[in-house]
Length: 190
Image (cartoon, rainbow, N blue to C red; front, side, top):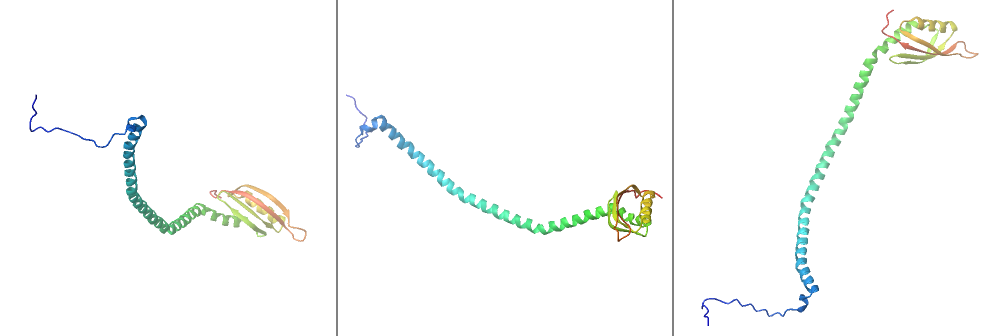
């Protein structure tokens, strides 16, 4: 007989729960596996829910900060709205001044026209552009109209003079209505 050492303990396990033969079947093993894996799935899902719930506070704070920054920037932009209107108005005035400065030589055409227009001619419309002039009016006599056309043709300041319309003012009124166009050459010397 063999002797056992006196101080060595024996491992004895006693299972008082009877084993169910159902867990030995395929369906039983699958259910046992599903319950053990399902536990981990539930724990994983709960962790995701807790993390999303906790991150919601952070995201809400970020949205609030962005909205307040956006509102602040909108107020700053709105405060510059009046300044922008003033700036655009001043820019338009500067552009108008630049245009006037470029077209200031157009004012020089009036003394030249005054020298070439006879006394019996009255203008109704006068359109002066940088390179051309167009005027309509009436002449009290045919002589006044002839003098006007001849003066414009002989003047070095007017080129390509064209008379577009000549018509009688009517039976009761003497004279002629006319429409004359011409190119302007203000750089010409007499």
